[in-house]
Image (cartoon, rainbow, N blue to C red; front, side, top):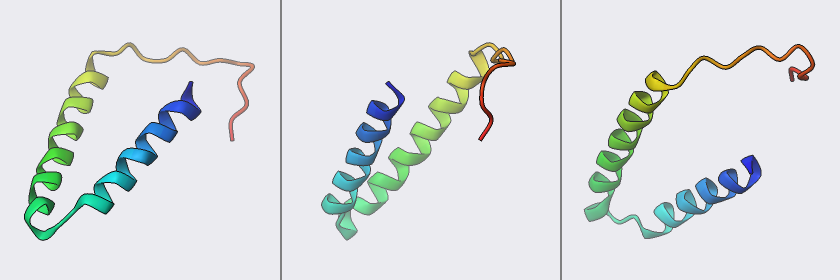
Length: 58
């Protein structure tokens, strides 16, 4: 699942880079700030993860 989400995010970034012009660059910048704001609010409402003693820490 994580690899799938990583691939989706990568594809969105590639699409953004290939579609960006001087005219759309500001809109993409604003969108990134808005996404960051929304994700921060989401994380605030999530419970703290439980420590997993068996998990490998890389």
